[in-house]
Amino acid sequence: MVLRFLHICFFTLFSISLLFSQDEKGYEGYRIYMSSPEIVSSKKKGFKIKFKGTNTGSKALAKDSKSEYQDKLIIKLDESLRNTNVDQFRDLIENKIAASKFNLKAGQSGSFEYKIKIPKERRGIESFSVNTGGGSGNGFNRKLCPDLVLDSLIMLKRDKKHVYVEFIVSNIGKGAINIIGDKKDDGDNVNVGAYFAGSPKFSRGAIPADQMYLEGLEETQGILFPEQSMKVSMKVSRKHQTKYNKTLIIFVDSNKIVIECNETNNRGHVLVK
Image (tube, rainbow, N blue to C red; front, side, top):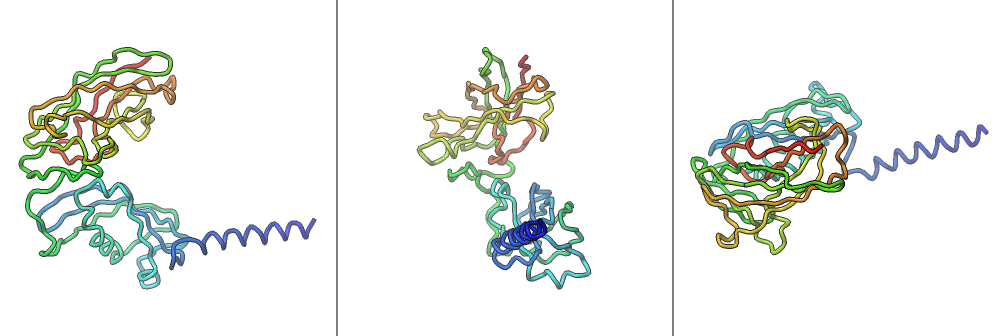
């Protein structure tokens, strides 16, 4: 019995050591994961970015022992950074993070803000591109930014398995939006997400129900110009709806790959009993 117990303990310790040995090359217990990137401000010479930082390593990151982990710290940036217009400066962000001091125990999180200075040779013109997945996008000026809105949302019908809705997507901004990507399939088009929630207010507690990618606009080669609208129909699965989540929220560009003047007017809701 004792021998069996010792065997189990040895196997458990061996498995744990193997897990860490197969981790990232050079990992020595110091690792931080930066998530939920938010652009606080942006100028031609640089920008401010905010992250939620979580110590995902096995050792504490203490200010007074920075020298111990400075050259060993593994930095992981959340992939949602690709949906911002500063992803091209990922190396500058990582260098700034590596040079900063942390005070986080293993598993602990905190909020961090960084001011990133862009070198002269990497500063672009005042206009920049709209990121639409694999598509190249259209350049636009900050003073001529586009603005997607969702309105006229109605429920056409419903059954036990699906809800059928119709709505209008309009561009009320002063700049155009590249709705359709460059690829033949629709995987790089602007998406529409559907969520079930307990109230019209969208939050992290909303349950993802379905999504679709916008299509059409052949006459404008996939571009939604200012004051232009498109009618959209969507079939939403009720598979994940519960009796406590009777509000269906439709969210245009829920992946947030389009840079707009106003990011808060892309949603609408209907009650589904």
